[in-house]
Structure formats: structure tokens, C-alpha cells
Length: 458
Ligand code: GDP
Ligand code: ZN
Image (cartoon, rainbow, N blue to C red; front, top):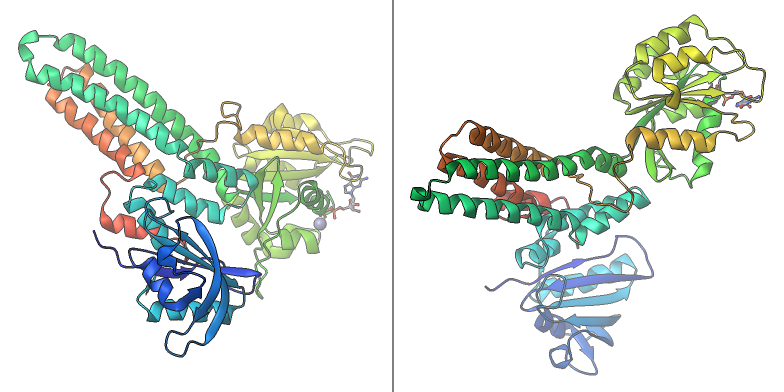
């Protein structure tokens, strides 16, 4: 199969020390040779070697750039095609000039994600690995990055392949029974089907359970800090921001209604809502209005409800406590350094002992208790940080649910002695849904859609 040759700038736009242009395809070396001059032609150099030289305009011979060129011949390259990477000076104009020359001499500008797409189509990586590359680019925390890295190395694919392998064995077993019905082992087969379905369902269940955590690690927990004026909301924010190096994504613009800011607590990214309100004035409700703050509350995955321990609860606080019971709340009793007047029991009754944290933000007490409480709320033990196979992609979650539904169907059918060739259809469906996760049997339009999310040059 003849592939046209694509080229793109692989490094971010703007100024940098160096920039890299990547060329991939059957003609990658030949096209590069048309614009490159060095000690030897690239066509003659050994694969996986680097060469110093110049990019020149073919007609005039004018030097455009001083470059280092890396040649990686198929199949030992990212795309499994011939790949040439040209490192030049980082200025935008010079990079663009080199790229233009390549395009004038036979290469085509790559679409976003096209390099990774070729890696997929050429069997170098599977679809879940390709999607992990997107996650790697977008990762907002160390932990999210590690998960994406692990997935790009194939940890999810491995789990899915194991699952599918089991289903193939099951289908083979059933096939034998369909082909040799005279053996009359139907009852045995039904028991066998149920056992195997249960095993597979357990696996899927575990992967789905990781989905919630995966989403949190990728996108952050939307967190609202709520409380009366002067209880310590700003102090809390500042403490959290100092605790782990804060990543501040200040959304530029004139409307500062809702500003997002990320802080990390034990590697969990918290996307704090309305921090402008919290930072600048005392009271979030005053600042952004009751309606807006209610809305923020509605969207929040986590609510940090702050109280002044030195004061008794006021009626509006009691109302808030009642309203928020049943939500993911951590009640923070602040100002522990002062004489305590607050009735803790009200908070314990509403939210549970493990969700009530006593702190003195002034004296930096209770910070680790808060971290523990937040961690405990969303990572309830069963997932260790070493087990980084998180399902975090919406498409994967959807397919896992479809597979689960099909297997549940198969189980029910086996239980009510539906003919086994009918059960076979359900199992086959489950097998196909799982296959779509790793890119077996996916449509071309879906593939295009997935890869279009990439940035240029990937
Ligand atoms: P906010 O209005 O809820 O954002 O509260 P701030 O964080 O601005 O704090 C209000 C006041 O309480 C400030 O003067 C803080 O220094 C003080 N404060 C915050 N935390 C503590 C604490 O743990 N102990 C004491 N004694 N004062 C605190
Ligand atoms: Zn404040």
C-alpha cells in the first residue's frame, strides 16, 4: 500500500531553542534529500542516525537553515513508515520556511493526529493507546500523566485483550456444542456459560469502577469552598495552593464571574470554583450573587464547607448543612486555636465523623487530615496507586457498559435455558464491543473523529 508523505511541525508554535519538523511516508527520505545538503545523501545513510547539514532552496541553492536530520527507516519508527525528523532553530519563520520547502517538494501537510493515526493503522499502537497520547498531551496532573503513560504503553489494551480471549474460549466451547448436539451436555454448558460470564462481568465491573477515579484524575474534582464571611475560605485556598505547587489557570478575560484554578491535594487535582470571589472579597455569596453560587454548588463534585469553630452555628449555616446532606461534603471546623463554641455533633450527624476535619489555618494544623479526608472520599481503598489501569475515556466507558449489558443478557439467557446459539450472539456482541475499545472493528469515521482531536504534528 502506497502512502503519500506527510510533514508537519512537531513542536509547539512560538519561539523555542529548537523546533522539529517530522516527515513520514514512502517518500520521506527522497523529499528530504531534495532540500537537504550535507556530507552524504540521506538515501545513503544508515537508519537511526543523525546528520548535520543545511536546508537549501533546490533552484537557487540558497541556504535556508542549519539543521540536524534524523533518519528512521520503516518499520522501526513511530509510524512504521520511513520517518525523517529535521531539527532546526526555533524561530517561527525559519521553521515555516523549511516546512514550506518540503511541501513544495512533494510532501503534504499532515492533518492533526495523522502521524499517530498512521501508527495505529500500521499496527504500531492500538486505539486505546492512541487515545492515551491525547491524554498525555492534556494531562493536568502528575498522576493523570502517569495513567495516560501507562495506558499508552498498553495496560488497558492488555486487560481488554485478556477479557476478549476469555470470551473467545467461551465461544469456542459453545461452538463445539452447537456442532455436536448429540453429546447432550447442554446443562453443563449452561453452568459453564454462567461461570464464564460472571468472571468477565467482574472484570468489566472493576474497570468501570476505576472510571470515576480516572475522570477525576484527568479533569480534576470540581470543588466549591463555601462558608460565611471570615470563617477562613481565603486562608484555606491559600493553604491548599501552597501545599502542592499550585497550577494556576487564570482564564483571561473581562468577565470574572467564574474563574477556575487548580490545586493538587495528594496528587488529586481540585478545580476550585469561584476563587476570584474567594480571593478578592470575603464572601462568595456576596460577590457572585446567591443564584450563581447555588449554581456553582450544583456543579461541584466536592464541597468544602468552612466554619469558624470559635462561634456557634447561625441559622443560615444550619440551613446550609441540611441542604447539603447527601452531597460530597467535607466540613471544616477552622480556628481550632481559639476557644471552641461550635456544636460539632450537628456536623458529625449530617456528614459523618470521617468528613469533619478540625483545622487551624492560621497555625497550619490539620492540613494532612483534610488531605486524607478528600482522598478517602474518592479513592476508597480498592484502587492502589500502583494499579494505574484507569478507564477514563468516555468512549471506553460506553463500550464497557455495552459489553456488560450483552454479557448480562447472555447470563440471563443461560439461566432460562435459551438455545445456546442465541446466547452465542450476545457473547459475540460483548466481544465486539470490547474490540472497539482497542480498535478492532471500528468504523473509519470514528477513527477520523478520534484522531482529529490531536494537535498538529502529532
Ligand atoms: P474568608 O472571609 O472566609 O475568606 O476568611 P479569611 O480566610 O479571609 O479569614 C478571615 C480572618 O480569619 C482573617 O483575619 C484570618 O487571618 C483569620 N483566620 C483564618 N484562619 C484562622 C485560624 O485558623 N485561626 C484564627 N485565629 N484566625 C484565622
Ligand atoms: Zn476570603
